[in-house]
Length: 212
View 1 (cartoon, rainbow, N blue to C red):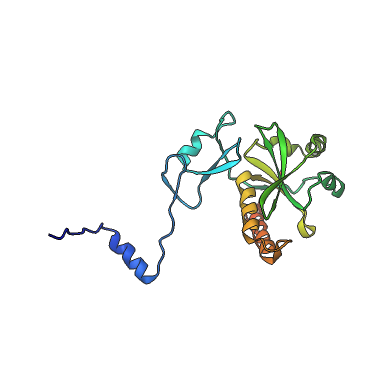
View 2: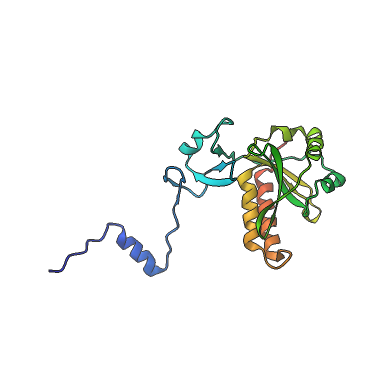
């Protein structure tokens, strides 16, 4: 006797999409409770490892506090710092090998980290404490950055002078874009184009912002 195979109600839809060449979009899930989440969703960061996790709003709210230990909720607002003060001499003193970097205070390490993107991902550059203190004295907004989850993003590529107070996940988004599009020794045109698109988007998001 042959056993009958009963199709699930939505199997025929999947089969039809496959026949027509329509791929089903991957579904993203919260990495804590596995609830389905949309493309635009919350992120958490694990300060000890700097690992980012996708999260639903309910799980993100559980860690929306400076006292949260294992995970911290990453904010979503970006502010362009039009009045930021950073001379060429001060930038050279930071000893960053390229003109693109972000700075974030690591609570586990009790210091500010300087990181820049490249073909291997985010690379850390040594940052002298007194150099950062001088920069913070000239720009008090740096003292307001939330440890682990907010960063100063500096873009001085191709004569640009752009400074952003930005969620740290956006910095790693930029790192990922550059790494994905990197070719050869210098990155190539694809990496440069990805970087340009990223900052065009940031300018659009912060067009009406006026920093204090």
